[in-house]
Amino acid sequence: MQYIRVASTDIANTVEPAAALLRNGGIVAFPTETVYGLGADAFNKTAVRRIFAAKGRPPDDPLIVHIRRHWHLDQVFAHTTSLERQLLDKFWPGPLTLIGPKATAIPSIVTAGLADVAVRAPSHPVAIALLDAVAGPVAAPSANRFSYVSATTAQHVVDDLGDSIDAIVDAGPSTAGIESTVVRLRGSVLEVLRHGATTIDAITTAMPDISDVVEITGSTTASPGQLLTHYSPNTATIALAPGSAIDRLELEGSVVLVGYDESVWPETHRFVSLGSRSNLDGVARTLYETLRTVDSSNADTILIELTGASGIGRALDDRIRRAASGRVEG
Ligand code: TXA
Ligand code: MG
Image 1 (tube, protein in one colour):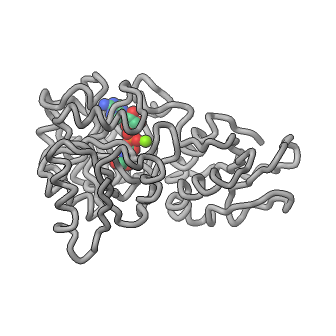
Image 2: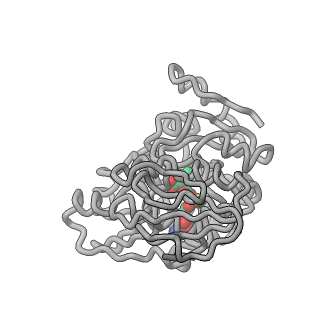
Image 3: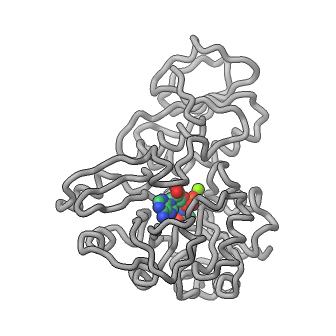
């Protein structure tokens, strides 16, 4: 495995060896503004198959194709509507993934056999430089073991995937820290498949022509990757309703409480703060790192409080609920 540390002064030259590996059928982990991705040339079936193997990801869970702004959009989508193009003009590059009809050239292994494909243009300068150098679409899921906590640093990727990948590009921690928002437009109706770093409010505010918003975030038929157990520590994890007291819960063994600066809990248990409720963007940046750290601390149970907030809170609570396999108490 080649470890490539990015020098911010010369990104283009630093990422060239990683781009060469991708062009030649390698699989490479790289930073995006959301989480680290594990990429392969989207047109290379053998390389894409290696992504599924490295992650232990089932073949029915489709990948997001990453492109450089609109440059490769017509290689990925068969066609687009003007409302879709308007949406992408406003939110790309950035943490928004759009589902649309797959172009014939995209191999069906990428979309897990679906007629539609997911595409996004990341805004991270290193991801942009890499896509520029590859000069074609890169299929990339998050660079973590299947169903485990996502990776927001190169070290997380090394811990999870190590020698099963060809290279890792290290550019420090991801800035958003939580995955992209996944949406589809059906005419003027916005379907939300996954809450993420772009809030739905931001989308509807910027796009007055969107007539309605429909939540299909729980649907594994619409989005096969939306499993109830996901982003999950190995330690048994329970989600707590926002602001709930914990004295009535029957807790055995060693318990770690994960909450916010404002949480008021007894000092009988170890407490880790995700930051202040008044800075949920900061909470998003630290959530996965904290879950990984707490998971390796030999606790019997992790209790983690939901934010109960709107905006980015929707995405955070989705991840927290899934980390707890849907178990919510309090
Ligand atoms: O921020 C992100 O989106 C990161 C970075 C690396 O870009 N990627 C990411 O990929 O989170 P992944 O594979 O961990 O999650 C992709 C999600 C899954 O829930 C999957 O089911 C959904 O997107 N998805 C992908 N292709 C789809 C399709 N054709 N139809 C419906 N859902 C799709
Ligand atoms: Mg993932």
